Image (cartoon, rainbow, N blue to C red):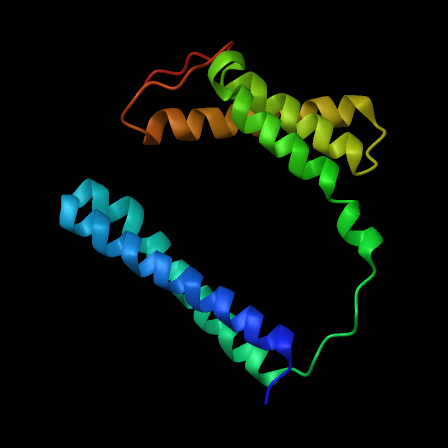
Amino acid sequence: MPPKHHVVDLTVLAGLAGMTLFYAYDWYSASSHLLNVIMVLPLTALMLCACLLQFFFSARHKAAPAQDDTAAMEQVPIMVLFGLYVLSLNFLGFDLATFLFIAISLRLHGERRLLWLASYALVFSAATTFFFSAMLPYEMPLTFLGFTS
């Protein structure tokens, strides 16, 4: 019988693949319009391929050594920051919230060069805001970068 953590991992993987298939069925039955298919079908295929690859890799590899809990606890501030980022999108705007999320994340991961940190966060948030403003058919709340599609 496989180790308990392999059973749990494969159960989570099967659940993720099942939810992906359910979502694919749901969006296709709701609207098979070309614009909807272009956005969702590649991501669905990518997700299912990732699940399949992970299934084969986890079935082939032996049990991983036990991990230290301190490594997992180091990720808690980033998870809290991401939650705050999601909650702040409507009132800060996508551009400003993304800038702050990237800048604070880099700072939490040890980046000390403030000019590089601010420049990277600015370029990334501007590029991301431009991309999503051009791709999404509805207006996003923005603070500074009023890109129009």
